[in-house]
Length: 76
Image 1 (tube, one colour):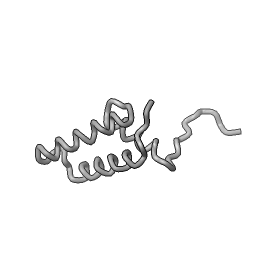
Image 2: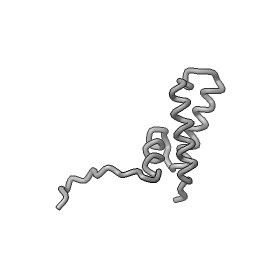
Image 3: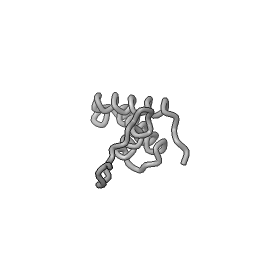
Image 4: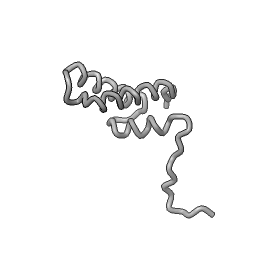
């Protein structure tokens, strides 16, 4: 699977956060469209089908991200 460059993911995450902070989903048609566009692009860039999965995947792919250890086996 191709992976998006971390700079691209960082930019998309910042755009998404800014649009969410401005409540773009309830704003002008242009703001709603921009939020939809960024959401779609994040999904494409991460190979996911919904924005929640895309956000998790994008953050996980950034440098310095540490995956949570969800194993049930205790470390030795």
